[in-house]
Image 1 (cartoon, rainbow, N blue to C red):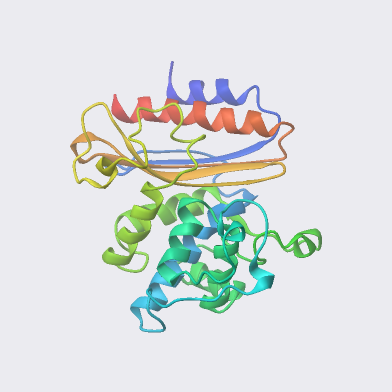
Image 2: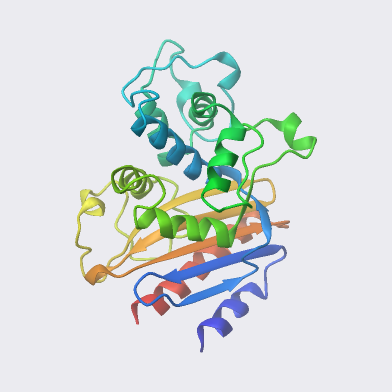
Length: 276
């Protein structure tokens, strides 16, 4: 069965909307469905946020080792652990970046938004890079803004192409882009893109090696979810120096579990296609 037939066969049971972008870094082959359709970004928007933090650090605006006091208004629910720790704890900016990516900490994310100068700064950063459909318009769990229509947005095509530039060191610099990719390799939310793959676990030191063992894949990903939204985007590193990018966004889901399952099944199809 062809890649297209397999993908559409899986999607035939989905009650909701989907956007897909796949790009093989080796041969530049691509596959997409609704690549320009706008989706709620959920926590995927944390990728460009951390890129901007790293950029400003490179420019000397602050040190990644600077300790930060987290203000009460930035402590919110959802994913993360900071809200469960002592309010006396002052994480460094680098630790806030790790928390925002590795465990998708919303309180860390809200603090980083303040550090870079607000939501508008992240949107401007994305637009300057040519990603006009990537927008940060509210902090995490700011339900009042969400109710008023100010959401954070991505398209599968934009975030997929962002990851391509990130992998080639063309977002901030080769050094800073690799730092972010390493954070993504340590991702602990693994129930979507990596779930059905022979992926090296994020706690295994092998994820940071230059050579991927035969029969394995290293997944540097970032998930996102809201009430009817399931997203996951990532860079996949294969043996022999091969790699590909896959971004899957979904919305208007009737069942959250169905969105999670579909992303895992689609990821397995694209993995088989990439390694054949």
